[in-house]
Amino acid sequence: MIGVAVGVALAGPADFAGWRSEARRLLAAGVPPEDVEWRLAGEVPGLFGGAPLPEGHAAASVPRGFLELAEVAIRHRDPERFALLYRLVWRLTHGEPGLLQVATDPEVIRAQAMAKSVRRDAHKLHAFLRFRLVETAAGPRYIAWFEPDHHILEAETGFFIRRFAGMHWSILTPEASAHWDGVAVRMAPGARRQDAPAEDAQEILWRAYYANIFNPARLKPAAMRAEMPKKYWKNLPEAQDIARLLAEAPGRVAAMVERGATPAAIRRQRAPVADVEAPMPDLFSQDPAAALAALKAEVLADRGPLAEHATQAVFGEGPLGAALLFVGEQPGDEEDIAGRPFVGPAGRMFNQALVEAAVPREKAYVTNAVKHFKFTPTGRRRLHQTPDAGDIAHYKPFLRREVEIIAPQLVVSLGATALRALTGKAMAISKVRGTMIRTEDGLPLFPTVHPSYLLRLPDAESRAREYDRFVGDLKAAWREVQ
Ligand code: URA
Image (cartoon, rainbow, N blue to C red):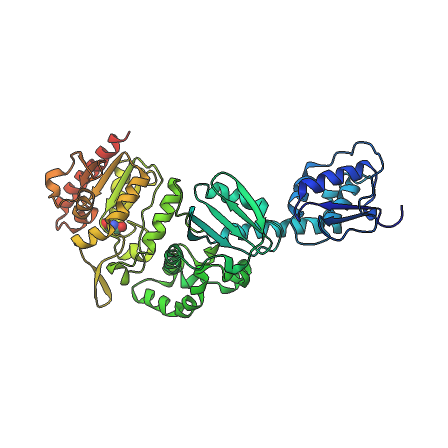
């Protein structure tokens, strides 16, 4: 046959099922790639469009790896994709069964590069999509706008259904839209940017969180641009802040150094800005890990009175479902810099006592009643200040949710502030130490002293005695949960 003999129309730009069944028919009929014109339904038909295929025999099977490659590569925007994939399948079934292993073959290279580009586009969709809440007559709906490079939307809806099954959402793109109502996904034509709403309260929260985790010392603008092309920045609420955060960066580093942090300590901080790939905390999920991430986002975004002077909020650490949950008072100077609980002098004392009591810290959850460092600046040092009733009340909703999500068997309060935050009452530790009482929410609570109490004791003898008692309390708490 000479020239284009067969025109094949596919239902959509990423219609893999259609391409596969047409390719099978063409192969069975022995139609070579140069005789096929691939197009989309609705496009102008070719000269020989719709010509019936000659009768043939069953198509030869193709390697599974090819189908996996083709299913992804077909979502590429390149108009040649259908023809390229048919040329590959033709060659695979006409004397080149090992073709995919020929790493230097230009057609194999091209198809693999297409699949890679599609996967990268899907990754960006997952990471950079931002839903905005809209109240509709049918209830709340979350709407997001995105401009993918390739035809990926339909294939990626499964990801969003799994993550946001419980909410109604729409993803709008210039080419297609996907609407989920909790039961089924409906694909619809493309939309315009202005069809998606502007910023909502949740985004404001996310921006505050982002500004909080922004680590100027680890900022790599070139890497950021490589990872997240400018094109996407306009969809990301936090990206609106990047220019300002960049401008403020040198001042923030200087302020951190002034607060006593070494440059190395600043760089070691978690959540560098290059973590823009981290997905948005899932504020809607019932899943404990997602609920904890969302709570952490809220705590890091907190702008209460103590947040103003602290370096950052310090959230709890440890596994979900930890049997023991320790509650301290508030982060100290070192915790404030590191962003982690109990890493300073009291933390080292606590760790030592845990080891002696044979309580594995990594199996426990450790947090604080108050999430920001409260201090008085005195010359070069920051002097710890005990949180007052107002401070405890401010952070109490966070602590209650944190305890509820971790769902420990036993809560251990370290010191008076934790005891007060957990029981809602100011009581003397000496009266309840080592006994089993309950938190305000009804969980078993085992009060003991704060490790910094041991550090403050004036003489070695009382320190040794009280340390042994503290280790005894930790052992008793651990026994309770065995
Ligand atoms: N003291 C606390 O109560 N918590 C810390 O994280 C550090 C010191």
